[in-house]
Image (cartoon, rainbow, N blue to C red; front, side, top):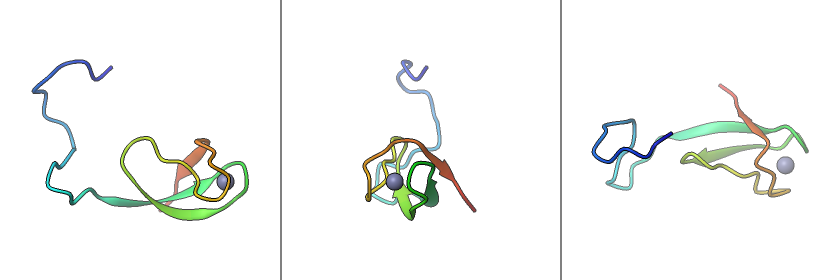
Length: 52
Ligand SMILES: [Zn+2]
């Protein structure tokens, strides 16, 4: 998947990652997440979807 090094992708190393809105598919919690492996802060599930 992302094994190649030096391949530009949408990632910012300066601590200004884009914050996205997510909704948890398990408990319905809505929260803001940063990064690729977002977990629900309420139930720790990774079964979340982006919501706009
Ligand atoms: Zn949840």
